[in-house]
Amino acid sequence: MRAVTTAQPRQDLDVQPTPLALLLLGREADPKSERGVECPGDLPAPSDPDLVERARAAKAKLGDKVFVLGHHYQRDEVIEFADVTGDSFKLARDAAARPDAEYIVFCGVHFMAESADILTGDDQKVVLPDLAAGCSMADMASAEQVAECWDVLTEAGIAEQVVPVSYMNSSADIKAFTGKHGGTICTSSNAKRALDWAFEQGEKVLFLPDQHLGRNTAVRDMGMSLDDCVVYNPHKPNGGLTAEQLRAAKMILWRGHCSVHGRFSLESVEDVRARIPGVNVLVHPECKHEVVAAADYVGSTEYIIKALEAAPAGSKWAIGTELNLVRRLANRFAPEGKEIVFLDKTVCFCSTMNRIDLPHLVWALESLADGKVVNRIEVDRETEDFAKLALERMLALP
Image 1 (cartoon, rainbow, N blue to C red):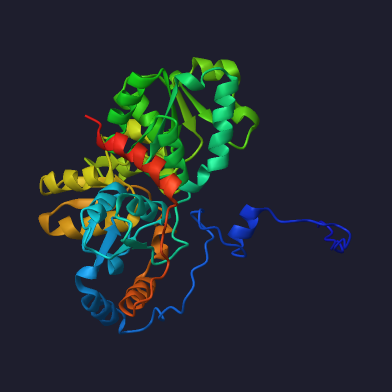
Image 2 (cartoon, rainbow, N blue to C red; image 1 turned 135 degrees about the vertical axis):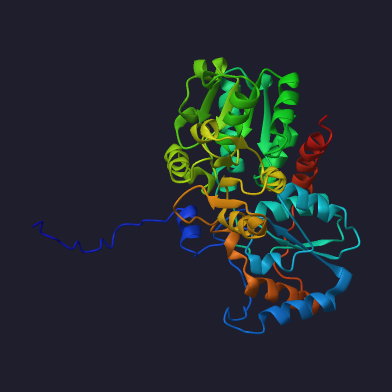
């Protein structure tokens, strides 16, 4: 048996926790971060049996002054009160199409609310019911890290050849960087069009922040090879790459990923095929390349929904995306005889998306009904202007 010793604390050491450690410990707040942000206010108890009625009453009192957006990955109890549902960009556009709504309540995550603020009018107020509802992928690329990456590309002599393309799942700061450096934004459904455009502008692409969507689009949809792609790791000197590797690459992929879609593995696909003969495997392009290569169908959340709507009765499907959506689709299409299962055996919700629950929504709606704006998401003017430029380039794609 190993002896266990207890060291006495050294009083002369001045150890300072890093900013990230403080965020994770919940001891600091950073409005620009996708996590660790404090949420003020007294929330109703989750056990309150009147929560549904309170939400209905507050929403009715607000009337046309409020427009509630619900992302596909939200809980059913929240989706019930959404005026529209969709993916992140669809919802931001829906918000922009409602200029008469004084309040936009975005039931999603931080970067989505930022995008809505960028695309809506100055007099409209975007509210995120829980400021700690974030996206780990978006947090994998900070403005400082990306600026340092651009310095590395400049030193390698290739920055002028590189066009940044940033996934919608990125912070306003990253969208602004993209706009400032001549790039565009993309979604999971138009990534190929965005990359086609980018390669018309330059010889290389810096793809932020999801390496899997960038790799899958380049290799699966555009005919590139895996050797055309390199991964830039912001935690290593020069991204862990040599100048020669950067010069040889066509796709410079940021080392980021979705914590939900990254869980799916080739073993998940093989296992579900063994368990359910004749199953169709349908996955999101944020999944790893080997998972996408083994799947029968690949597409965005909107694509997944439409594919299941068009599927014949009696067909069997294993879906590789967030569990709230998969479960909702399984219940919706069960009466039509469609069998829909989650691709992985392990239950996996998007933990930060799930931070927005009925108590937070009730608190936000009741506060607005009382004339108090809480958890407002505001993007500063300079960031907004450059981010909007990148978004407008996307909207202009053929």
